[in-house]
Image (cartoon, rainbow, N blue to C red; front, side, top):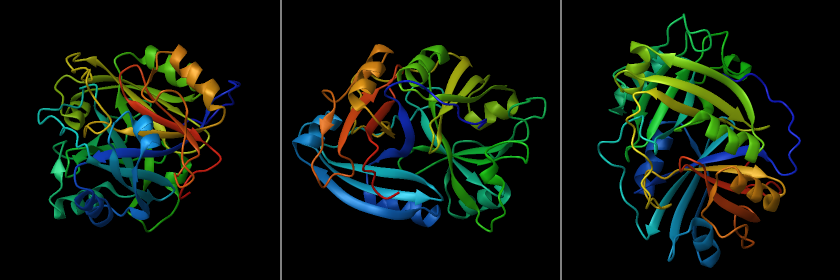
Length: 328
């Protein structure tokens, strides 16, 4: 869906999507899955604690183990809250629940990638890879498959046909797993999400589609699924994709007592300039602060100052200064 990035004149704006942070229960088991079943590479590993991180994450008595991983040019982070531990993902989670989030991993050969996952007994979230129908101008020919990591977090395999996707996904390569195209989040209202991410954070709309039919239903494993899909992005990094379920509108809201150590809580790490200005813009467009404003982090932190906010549907963003970004 990537159509190019336009300029934006907001005084404070996001300039890059740095990483997607996934909360896990067992950092060793999760790291093994992402580096042995999937071919992510370890970039760094650290434990964090202390008052600054407590204020940033909104968790008192925090100690967390963080592993930063790379696939192609993109990054994810695995976060294991050693103390205090959070709650597991509900066993009856569905793809239209508002806490749903995934990362889309681009592959060069869907059949080979799916066979690789089957060899490792990876948990299915879709019954099999689905090819979206040709009548869908913006999504026809895309092949996609949902699966889960050991903690139940959703991931997606995605293969673009030659006429779709960023041109870099079509470069000649002998690699099977290429990188991360986007992270997708369920939103209750696309217009509301755009006010926050576009008008508040200065991100740019990259593309949109309306998907439905048996292929989409099987992909999401939601009967009768009809989705309005909108992608936004910054000058670098993967896109953020909004999934608004036009039907069925039975998805459950983010629990009011959700905290950063709960396993369904993901963080999208954004780099930005003028954090104070950006924090006010985000708040004015429906954002909710988790941290008490911008936090000046210690010298050994991977970023100098940071802000933790949640968007209108409750998905979390950790926005940090662009001057110091670890592992790029």
